[in-house]
Every structure is written in C-alpha cells, then in structure tokens.
Length: 349
Image 1 (cartoon, rainbow, N blue to C red):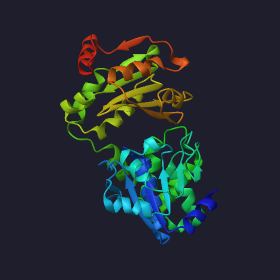
Image 2: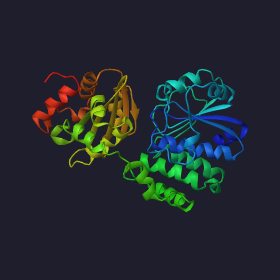
Image 3: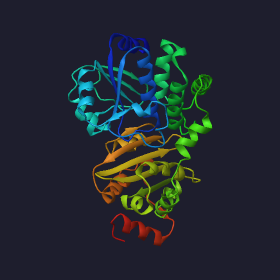
Image 4: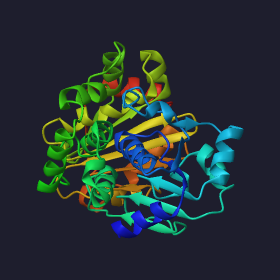
C-alpha cells in the first residue's frame, strides 16, 4: 500500500492537504511533514484548514504556510488541485465548514492518511492503520519507504510532535518498540530537543490557567466508586478565567492523573454545541462510548460533537455510559461546589 500511495504522489503534480477542525499535534505534525515531503518531490502543495493552528503548535516550522478561509486564491488552488489529501480525520464533518465548502468545488480523486476507525467511503485511496499510534507514524513510514534521507530536521520535528501528542508523551498502549525506534531516528535526523517540544506543547499555559483549573475542578464528579470521573468546561468558565478555549483540552490529563480514575469524560461548551472528550486506561474502550454520541476515535482516546446544550449533553453522555460502568453512584468534591457548577451550566440545584 505504501508504494501504491507513493505512485499516486508521483503521478500527480498539485495537491491540497487538510486535517480536522481544531487541529491537534498529530493533525498539524502529519500535515506539515507530508507537505514538505511532497514539496521536496517537486510538487505544488496547498496546506488548507478550517481553523487556525493553536499557539501550542504554531512554532513548528512550516506552520506559517497553512491557509485558512475561503479566499478566491485558496478556492482556485483547491479547484485546480489534482489530489485532495486528508490526514488524521476520516469524515467530512470533522473537516470544518471552511474545508467542506471548498471540497464541494473539488471533483478530483481524494487520498486519506489516517489511523482512526470507520472511515467514510468517499476516499479514492486510503493509507490507514487503526493500530498505528498516530497518523504521523504512517507519514513517517511513507517517507521512509521512498527514502529515509528525505527526513530533515523540520520534518523530524513535525513528526515527533505528532507522535508525542497522540501517545500522551509515549505512555499510551499504542507505544511499541517500533515507536521508540522511530523516535530515535527522528532525533538522529535533527529533531528539536524533546524538552523544547514538550515545553511548547504542554508548558505554555497563560497566567489565567490556574483560575480555569480551579473553576473546572469545583465540579469534578466521580462515578462507580471513583473509577469514572467527569468535568464540564463552560463558556462562562472560560470568560471568567480569561482562558482561551485552546488551553482547556489539557484538563483531561489532570483528571486522568487522579488515583483510581480509569475513565474520564470532559464536556467543553462551544459556540454551537458541546465537545465530548473521552480518555481511559487499560482495556476500557471509550471509542464505543463516543460512537453512541455520533463520534469515534481510539480505544483509550475518543471524542464526539453534540449539538445541544451543556445540560442535555451531560444527560446524553451519562445515560450512554458503557455497561461496565452502569453504576451511577456519584461522589462530588463538595455540595456547595456542585451548586456552583449547577449555576454555571444553567441547571436547577
């Protein structure tokens, strides 16, 4: 399959590469690395996303080339492209409104490079492996199949960032000896030091971040004797704390760091709906939980977008808890704190 995909790249000259809305490290890492590789083959590449790159990732070289917005120039480039490539997302609705509209103008073949389950059927070619640790791993395999010497310091840094973020800094069950071998090779190729990469991604919080943590953790709730925990991040919390939405995603790591917690749900209120993020340890398959809400993902990390209010989204999520966590016994931090949370999300105490 890798050689077949390389044939696709060889046989065409103009490419668009996109990824999912609200892009994370693997989305941007795989997109930038693939874009530079295809450029090095003498091809034209447009990097085109619905949402801007978050500040935790905009330091990666090449990120300034990513275009957003349906400008005439972008739409013309999309319409003239030979192949439309999607990385780290396998459904149209994950691409965001901007890319979806541009895709409507494109009539050529499409290529998917991804490691998620259940891709839609509109892709012409697919390079996918749901057992891969990250889409960046697949891009690494593709480049190395062509020529490992094509991986320079910039590509190595982009791929390292993608793999690091999608493996939870190399602690998820998807980390294998192969992953460590890949990382060793990327470091040999001149990748930015792990300390610097980690610092940019995870140690870059604003001074307002502790205020948001305090607000969110006042509503931390435990289920099933502490094995399941959930938190809600409302727009009011973000406004009161002065924290940008992009900083809220790391809250899930804090919840999962609590002793005894095996499954975590975080609901984040957006302008039009609620984002549900699921994390787990061991053999708990949260991707199945996410699919009951119209989402998907991996065994230990998944997500869904729920077009409803925070209150209704919480009810839907809790009512769809997998059978092995049907016990709804709850333990809250403080009764007063739950009342405070109820006020924030508009629920009646």
